[in-house]
Image (cartoon, rainbow, N blue to C red; front, side, top):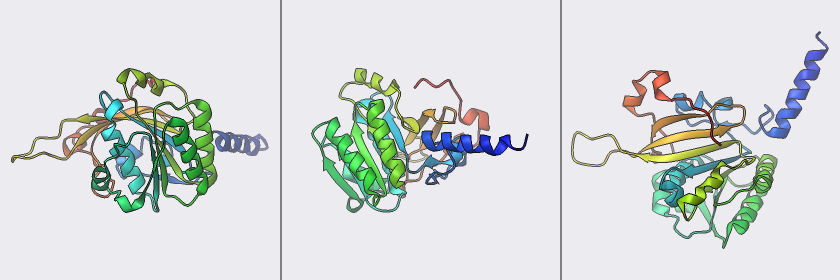
Length: 251
């Protein structure tokens, strides 16, 4: 039935346009790590979309690894980055170490989550920024949908960095949102060096939820000075099945 196929294709295109998984999007930003990109829908992070990132364990509160993961993504975008916070503990030298120098960052210190979300939405609608980052504890479906639609309209990538004052409050991270992907980043011990010193930081990167994609986790070396992740040599030597275990999504 040839006449059905164009109608089916059009229907899929319309559904994809509505939920943000369609082909008529703003492109993707690959991580440049084959073992990571091949597991992502379309081979990278969707631009013109909202993504969520949180730290695992104690990182749910301090958020250092998650913030550096987000900064590495923003560093690989062109243009200024709007970074909205409620806590004045953003460590500029740490961002610079992963490729995001202070001159590229526009800070907005807001008093609460509502103000952060409002600033993020304005930034995403602007269309002239490389990325918009917001440090928020609570993110409702309504708020996340507004951010996602604003990102979709301008093509700017939105990154919600989820942080909480108490680890017990991190249960909000399991609530449904309109984000395209949901990530959790946890610190791991660095690989031992043959001489005294500290090796490159290593993270457990978990994709907890992805539209039209599967969840997975992967050990990676932290972002370098250009915002790029790297697969550790010992992990690269393992089989593809051992390198990233798939599990049932929890979020």
